[in-house]
Length: 195
Image (cartoon, rainbow, N blue to C red; front, side, top):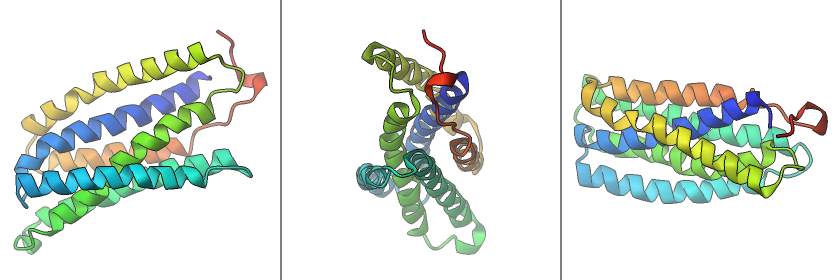
């Protein structure tokens, strides 16, 4: 696997984990109630796994790699929509509409749940076919380790930063991941470095 694709895969894994942990801790500061927001979040994340599976069902030849990039971009676009919606819901103009925040949390967690599914499959699509199963295990372990390191900052930032900066951060990280999804490059045997 090229370093370029490994960098982008690590961005996907890190953004998804970071957004998950930041959002989960930030629920207590959002209107709509902690229990209601958490319930919506759990349902949305389960639905997100199904959405990720449906997106992957369309990732097949012809142009499977391009379809994978689009599936990743759709996931992070949902996160952008959700964060913009929560920001809009926090404004004073719609202060009485407490149902809006759980509605947009639905988008955020659909994005997170679906991103987890698609990013696991992305490793298999991006890595060249001749890599051994031990290489895949190492790649998964390294990506997971990097994501854990980055995601540990999520809860800290949710507690330290003033409202609405954590939600803006969710939107910014989702935007970076969405743009990165378009920069993935399909690998062939000629541009692969063997370990």
